[in-house]
Amino acid sequence: MEDSGWPARIAAARARLAAGDVPRALRHLAGPIDDAPAEALELRARACRIGGDAAAAVAPLMQLTRLRPASPVAEHNLAAALGDAGFALEADQAATRAIAKGGTAAATWLVKARALTALGYLDEAALAFDRSLQTGPDEAGVLRERAQLEWMRSRDPAALRSVVERLRERAAGDPSAAVHLCECLRAVADASAALDALAPWLVREDCPDAVLLAGFGAAIDVDAPLALRLSHRVWERGRSRDQAAVAHAYALLGADCPQEALPILDDHLARFPEDRAAQGAREAVLRVCGDARALSATDYAATVRIVRLRPDLEAGDRTRWLDRLSGALRALHPFSAPPFGQSIRGGVQSRIDPRMTDDADIHAVFDGLEATLASYAESLRPRKDRAGRARLEISGAWSVRLSTGGRHVDHVHPGCRVSAVAYVDLPPAVASGSRQGWLRFGAAPTGAGRTLPPLHWVEPRRGDLVLFPSWFWHGTEPFEGAGDRLTLAFNVSERQGG
Image (cartoon, rainbow, N blue to C red):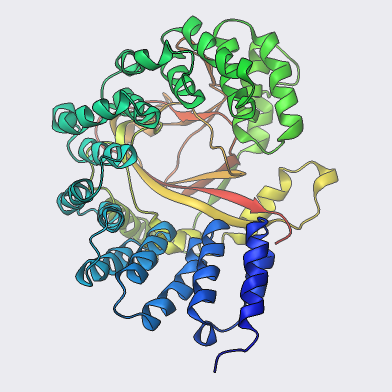
């Protein structure tokens, strides 16, 4: 029987949600979903998704499909939440049901295309993307995803030429399409081609900030003066100053003006102390300035932590587990090229979060790590801030397979606190004593194609997990010869008060 107080609870939740108070909105909607009316279920799912918890939206949306068994919209909404939560197989199944019930929206085909991509059904995913584009307008974001899929499955620029040309046609009048085109061309061509594509926008006085920042990203390593001009335009306007702070600091660094970059970053970090990209930029600036506050090799050695996975197993059992883990991860790599914008050179990355598989050997990597991760995250806090109230969550996981000549360019991970990488398979070159394939720290890029020398290295060992602060500049040394380098990596975030 429906609770007679639901109308008041729904009204209160709507008011809280309109005010941006997701936790209180959800408290008004709490309770068994079996007794909730459809309006409350819709609102609860919406609040969960606004709060960034797509997985929590699944249960109310699933109940809605029971209340509305003939509704393609209910199935679509469930499919979208499942996809956002990482449940690719279930998302594909729900999207298929939505289509069978008469759902022909471009958005439903898009959900299906993304799920099929994550599952590794690349030909079927390409067809689903095409149906989405045929059903709806040439959405710039969808064209970008379609181009990325073609690149990942073929690594052939010619294979995605028609999609890129459609994106180029949109870019003439759509700044978001121009940004996506720039990203595509940086991956499949080069920075010069990306800048040429943006040229008609960059000369306009009303060029949007997002396009200027995309131009900065393409220019920073090939044309330092242009990168500085573009970032300065955004900085001078002021309306996107917070988003532009890190870019403008890097542009100043590339233009050999590090002393001007430091106060920009210090001011930004005073207001946004958890901005990991800004922390990484500041570290690069401090090193270039020769500032004593910059990290030393000793600091890196003392902070990076190495953990042995599955120490409970005997040597032979552990080797067999790692062999099974290797097979399970390799099954997640159907691609020929990495996604756009990644640090990978000469390798591929999984498109499904390994945790979302039903493989026990993959899950065993994460089992029992809670105390280790909590202890390490707490050790990174200043002592005065160690209150022990943060809730840790793994905010993303992936696998990377590098082949001969492969490496990671140096980068940081914004939006999280701790980064981790587990070594599953290693090429013989890693043990050669020449640091081939080793993890390195401190080699920050400083613009104009320059990179600071690394300060610390970690020799990968099969079955080791390496933990480090996500703002540490890290990359890998390239390796040559037979074999490949297979890893499972993840990021850890904190939520205060959990």
